[in-house]
Image 1 (cartoon, rainbow, N blue to C red):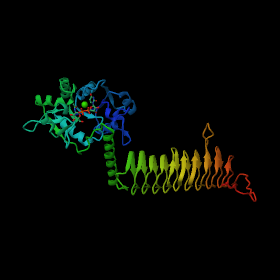
Image 2: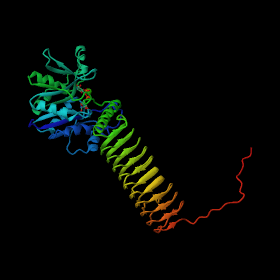
Image 3: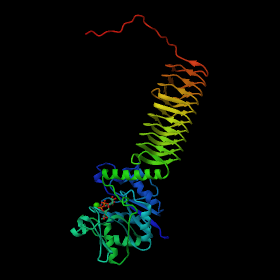
Image 4: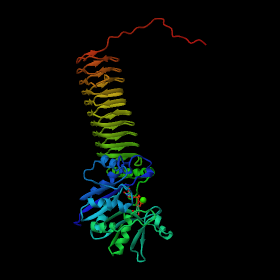
Length: 457
Ligand code: UD1
Ligand code: CA
């Protein structure tokens, strides 16, 4: 264990041209969150004393969108190279301890890997993270001397034919003591093909003064993959999702297919939870013991109680669902909804900003909006709350043990008293008394002998 402090610099000034997007590259979402946040999370787990992010093109958007109060932002107006980028952050750092340089577009980097680099640098070394690549194209190559010691890093575009054949590549992630880094950066020049200040040139500088260079390897062969295009982003998304699916399986969750689940937030599961294919979880979702989620469901910021069954093709957002409830198929539960235990919400039923009490049911084709529904209520097919008068929303109150027939309109604000029955096809525009049957005055006539028109040939 080292007592040295750690400071982190994250390079994120690149334009990301190959994303073909107006959104700055590091804001593109990976598993539902800007990719830079993933890098920040990995860095934060090392408890750095400073966390600096170098931004350039579109940088204001990055700083304002992320709202990260623990980050200090460094501006790099012109992208003159990775070395130049680090220089912009140096004045914002404490002049001691170890500096770790990360990339904002390498979002799957693991904290354990970073810790090994930090430890090496803390012992007095320039620590490099390198990898053997099957196809080293595009990367800086690690040039070693006859004794196998690192001599320098050469960028692809400056490399000779022989150097290009080297398969050990630079991931770009490095750590070094602050004072050393500062001195090496001061000596950088841009005498290379790209006319850039290469951070990688600090390796030759360290070697020239006999300073130790330590090499570390990432824990996994894919964690240093960077994002330069939508294609690479999509590949990383699948890797992140597979990591999450595997973690769920390890924890005892049943997944019909670990390759067909997307978790774009935090999903916590009790015991014996089962999730069918193509479900998407966003925000914070908590599933109690024994919950089953059918195929093609989307759950966003939802809590689901023990034993509840979410049937296929349901969309639930901002809702709390009790135990042993049955939702769907084809249910839409909108924000502000609380469904008590044993509630049934069936096909083509939309519930918004409403509370349904214990064992109440709306099994088919209904709209329940801005309603307070008691327990043991049955809402018939085709029933809707008319909650909107064109200007304001109004509440509907349905007390315990009410039976509402099919195709009823409840014109809010309105209250249906306890134990009331509403006949099919009724428009309830005044409060309906408890315990009574309420229907509209309607008559049914039959025209004797009426003939259906016949089309002439
Ligand atoms: C860099 C390394 C190369 C390594 C590769 C790994 C250098 C000179 N080369 O190459 O050895 O194999 O990464 O992917 O360091 N950035 C800035 N400001 C700049 C330039 C870059 O903030 O002026 C940021 C980018 O946003 C990006 C990171 O630095 O996050 C790397 O830049 P990029 O241009 O992708 O590096 P490469 O030239 O590919
Ligand atoms: Ca470059």
